[in-house]
Image (cartoon, rainbow, N blue to C red; front, side, top):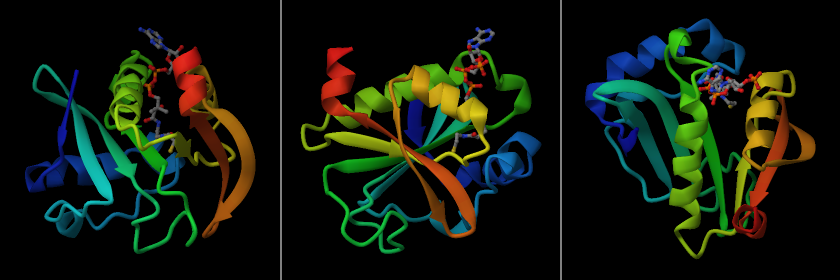
Length: 164
Ligand SMILES: CC(C)(COP(=O)(O)OP(=O)(O)OC[C@H]1O[C@@H](n2cnc3c(N)ncnc32)[C@H](O)[C@@H]1OP(=O)(O)O)[C@@H](O)C(=O)NCCC(=O)NCCS
């Protein structure tokens, strides 16, 4: 598995994935891909996980302190990163890909000494994602409303990651 930058060449793939039932159920993505894939703001990485040439999933690593949309609020620690992940095709679920990808993402994030905590915000109804993140060491912090969505905020601290 490798992580590479998402580019405009991934447009069709990402739009197709947006239509998949398991992705819609997790909270429909609202990205305007044609625009987003053409820009690379320093507060965000958009990555494709690829296995032997096949695009498997999407990952976004966000520095919420730089995010002009202030999704995570307007007074967020610069040491925090927010992660989003999805596996594109339903036939690629439950094969361990998500865990492999997230382990790569955790390593990539904590490789930056500045970063001391990672957050995710699965829908409160997304029990599969809660199990997934818990297995990876994330801890439930609170239930929070983001727009219309009720989400669990789950956190993985650097100390906890390296002590495991
Ligand atoms: C959450 C998500 C990323 C997990 O990805 P995944 O590749 O299915 O994750 P894994 O395969 O590593 O683990 C999922 C399950 O498969 C099991 N599994 C892992 N490897 C396996 C294997 N080789 N064979 C069979 N089962 C396996 C795990 O034990 C786990 O079981 P559980 O659901 O009963 O807890 C994926 O379900 C997804 O994209 N969901 C939609 C979007 C989403 O919810 N994103 C996160 C919230 S924003």
